Length: 544
Image 1 (cartoon, rainbow, N blue to C red):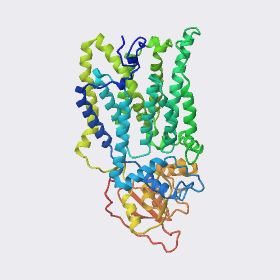
Image 2: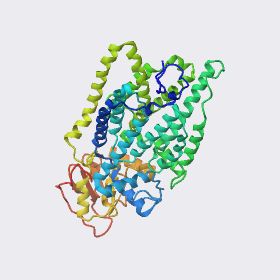
Image 3: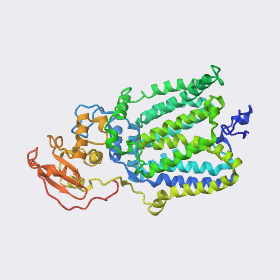
Image 4: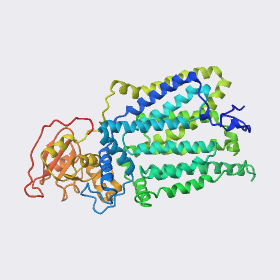
């Protein structure tokens, strides 16, 4: 049976009629569905506003954006005293300029507005990409809300936002091309050139194009093997091969040329990344976060829809009618594995898998409604309740506390920074990497820092390995080396005891968050230190 105007929503070959060439997303929505669409859009807007957190590196991104605009692209870092002659490859220049302009325009409200605009754009592109059935609009809205909810929990002001946006745009073009080849696919090299200048996630585009190229070819080859050399349908077009090559070349359109790939390789191959950065770690099923729980829900929903919708025996025979499904399965499987391997890839899975989940959901629902109508009627309210309950922990705090303020992900050394500013202390501060960009934003050029979150893109391996040992184990050998003038540590950090016991260092300032040590005999003659033990931090818990 075939439902006209709905590509992919059939069990047999599509009839050769113009209506069969109409995409699901081109079908007009029934007027009675409009209030539900408007309500869903309002919920999506709230979701994009819900997470008002300042990333550890936000202050650096804002500062670098101002630097790029005033000084152009520079090759060496001016903010740290430990970088030496290391080349600085700024792989997020475009995103940092946008963040600076938003901050310069309206402060933290500008940054919140920026991330909301990007979040809503992602949601709208996803909605445009997702197939639509006028008789099952509610199912499309539920899948949309579930996927956008997952993404919204990652909408922290940071350059990764642009990777999510570009992934949505790439997903739209590739999903459209899979079902109805279009010349618009040649926009992907343009997207690659833009993406490369905004965030290092441009490699996602190369991977997605490759998957959409390999998927149909592999399925066609499977058909040839299963049918003793007889091809099933015509060989898939190799247009995506040209798009892939052009997109790869387009990534060289950046201030550093091919060197941008060296930076990316270092980041992806660094063995320390998963150990020190939480979002790069694998899924923790024993102690899952809310993001991980929602990801598991999405994964189960996708698997259920695919199991009930795809004619598996026919697909495994290499039948050309299932070529799009084979591509979708490959794309969803690879991005799911990426999400399981690294927490930060969960939004990419939600963006890419959403249209396939809904397409298979429509088919599975139709089959269930035909075979077991009572079960289908019971299933509908169960899904509605599950989605509603999953949204509550995010929406309720947003409604109850709507203040447009950016809160820190964890306490920052606000009191110590104010102490340094008011006492006009200057020099080199050795610090843990999570505080580095906060310090450089507030103290440069008065002070230089020892480490920050750019670690392997600007610091040598010796420096960042020593800093990790300083933060996690309290090893102070590198910290006490000249030309360090001050050492800033967490009040409960392991470096406190060895520094207290060190004859050359004394406490200058301390509060519940941070402790600032200075040399007993300053490296610069005439420097004076004061001792402060009580202090009221600036706007505790909020940006800046």
